[in-house]
Structure formats: C-alpha cells, structure tokens
Length: 302
Image 1 (cartoon, rainbow, N blue to C red):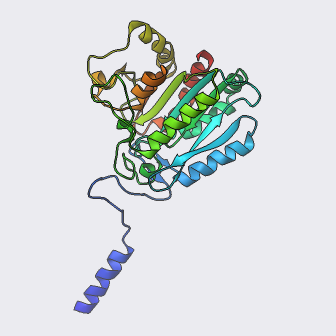
Image 2 (cartoon, rainbow, N blue to C red; image 1 turned 60 degrees about the horizontal axis):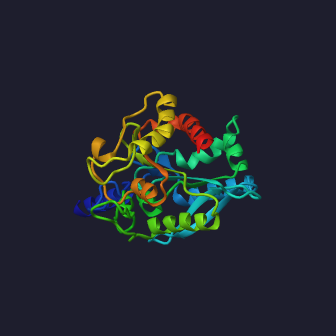
Image 3 (spheres, helix red, strand yellow; image 1 turned 135 degrees about the vertical axis):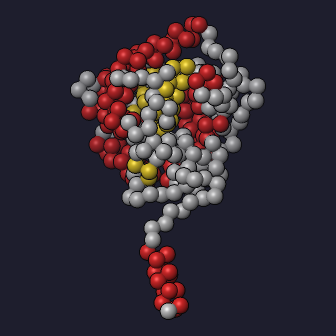
C-alpha cells in the first residue's frame, strides 16, 4: 500500500503543470505558447518577434531594415526596425520603444509599424518620402520579456539606468540593453547630421492610459512654459483621438518620482519631445487603431 502511494505521488508531481516561479519575482514564469504579460496580453516569444521584424523588412526593403544593435545579458540579439528613405538625407527622426519593463508588454509597438504601413492615409510613407526616419524597438528588455520580469537578467530596472544632467542623483549606463540603445541613436544622429531626435515615446503598463511628461526625477520640477506648449502640441491629439484618455502630467505628480528614466534622458540629452505612455490593463490590445491615429498626427507634425 505504501509503495502504491509513493508511485501515485510520483505520478502526480510528474504530470502536474509547473511554473518556474522565482523567490525574487512573483511573475517570473513563462505561461503557455506565448508570454503572458501583467497587461493581461499574451505575446510571442522574443525569437518570434525578431522573425516578424525580418519578414516585414523582406516585404518592404525599400524603406524597412532590421537593425541588430547589441546583446542582452543572456546573449539575445537586441533588435529594432528602422524605417528611412533610401536616397534622401534624413531630416526628421522619431523613436518608439516597448517592454522596457519586460512584464509590461502591450502588443502595440510590435504591431505599430505594419499598422501604419497598412493605413489608407499613407502618412508613414509620406513622412519617409519627406526625409523622415522612425526607429521602432518593440522589446527593449528581451530577457525580462521572455521571463515575464520587470527587470533584465540581473533584475535591474532598465528605466532607472539612463543619465540625466539635471537630476540631483544622476544615473549612468550600467546595463548593456540601455547603453546599446543610446549608442544606436547617437550613431544614427552622427551619420545623419541634418537631423536630431525630434520625438521619443516609451510604452509601459498599466495606469489607465496615463501620459507622462518630464521631469520624472523630483516633484515640483517642471519644464519651461515654452516647452510645455511645444509638448502639448503632441499631447493634445491623444486627448482627441482616444475614447477615454488618461491623465497627463509628470511622474511625481501622478505616480512617484523616478531617477534615470528614458523619459528624462531623451529630453535632457537631445531636447526631444519625450513621453511615456502607461497603457490600460486588458484593454490596450484593442486600442491599436487609436494609437495609429495618434502616431499619424505625430509624424505629420514633427
């Protein structure tokens, strides 16, 4: 009887589905055929994300190329899509990133390029034809993404790794994922001296469609009035196109202070219109059409 009980227990544990939970991170697991995010959205593995990017580049080699710009801590190839004119100097440059926090995948950034190309308005095509470039990084933190983890393989929050000259506690690049992206943008601008980084958006989750503006490092620190006017020119379209837009403000006013964010870095380093979008849990996947409208407005006004 005891032997039969032992056999039954062995069989039970051998056949019961398991999740690789970590004592350091309650969300550190892979669930099913894809990656299940805290946003409530399941996404393809990072290797499939790369495959999709390469397929898009094959379809549109006239304007799309895949850029491999470094390695993650676990050796994954950091990969982006660059849309740019082939025979024109670049005079406008925009950047969009997703999954800086690996567990905040929204299924927006990875679909945005194809959706803009499929749009009947041809705004993206016209933007590129007029000397515009768009760098799309669907998954900035592939190690964290594939493990449903906020931080990278060292459990470091990549959105605290970016320098800011104004901050009383300035950060410096310590993680390969963030430093590699900064070098990619720096080198692109060096190769295209007629342009600057005009616009940068980082997609996060999940605070009900909230839109964040600099500065994030300290409550009571704000942009100049002229900068606010310049930013609002790109913020207002979201309020127009989205059915239920979230609050707009600085991180300390709406959430909490944060040192070393992409939000502050792109504005501090390049003077770019720099925004962080906080998606709505379980709803953002169906919001792509509104993001396309917003991005078309952005690209027409850079």
